[in-house]
Length: 519
Image (tube, rainbow, N blue to C red; front, side):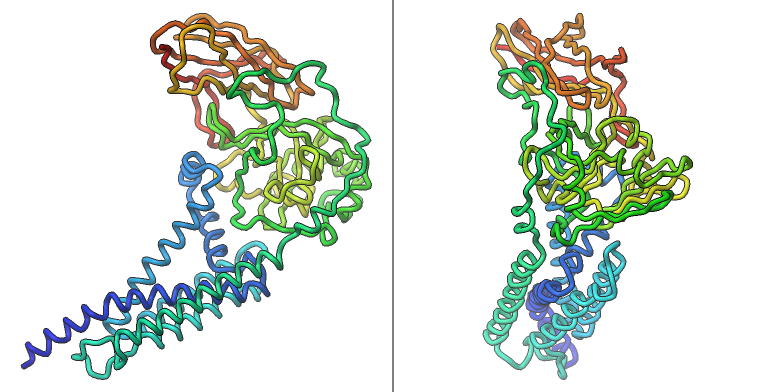
């Protein structure tokens, strides 16, 4: 008799497993949906997926971040979110199955643990407050209740059904709960996007005329070669590398920038204050330190903004200071070399990009642009605070993670066309690309075929040494497989380093090298 009862119990457990897993997934949907709904009142950074995601970014090893950037580029955040959702789904299914097979308290405990973990992530985020725990806690309470509605503890463990209701009733109830969770998520997501956007504010921006317009390049800045980068990178094509899962939305009427620290005259500026300053228009190339040799994380844009040097002079900077410790609205910190910001280069508080207000992804309403420095030590987006300090006193986000505190852009060049691994026809083939060393400039670019002599390329004109320089060399290609290499010389006579080094901790070096087949 006991053997028969045991077999019935095992059969019951097997039957409850898949149904319990489904109930666990439904509970997760409810958790996320209710949390998104509550986040309308507390802010997008408090939604569990974002809070957990930002915490994951903060604790991800640097080698894994580099892997994600290199292989997924600007889609790295989508991959991260997909991974988070997939992991939560798997754990929820397992917890649901375990709770259904034993006691539902097991699953309720797992839901509570998820709620606590997400709450801690939200509260400890740089912009977090006590109310940041609200969405995750509310989502966990409702999700736990939903699971208890769907799954009943069995007073008689030999019963092989999920509970006293028919399976059709349970599935119908589960579908209704799932629909409610999905509706809450959609309403919450739409509500968040509606409540926390600055689209109207950005649309209303009207720039005054620049007191110092873009200087003339004095010649052609590019070549008519298919596949070659344009001198000015369109906003939609400009690279984006940052840690923000949710792009900050700041209305210009709410914007404030504080400058303080080792200064005589600390001050706070509104967006209108910055627009009222003399604005300059400059073409400046920005480059990410994660850009590998021949990589895509670089672009050239026309920036409109207020020069930083006069602003710091007005603040009265202490001669002992050497760092601008900048903070974004989302809590990201970036440390810039004070000398680079005040040595006469066009370091600016940028408000415009290629003739329009900054796109949200690129820092609206105000960002920092300092020519000649990698982005992680200069180009703070969504800038709200500048603490004039020292490198000894404060370390910005990337420095404790092993990156160099100071990182001038290195001399580099890239072959845009032909593409590596491509097939071209024998005859005259244009080889073209870009070269850069911002704030120094490029004086020469050379191309070598199969390790042979270096051939001088023709250089396009530039607005200033703060931009990249386009180049072209006409190659008389012969049939077979060939290796093309490029190297540049800067305006100070330095030749590009041939030895390959990784981008960590302060920028990659090496000659861009490609293989092509000529037919």
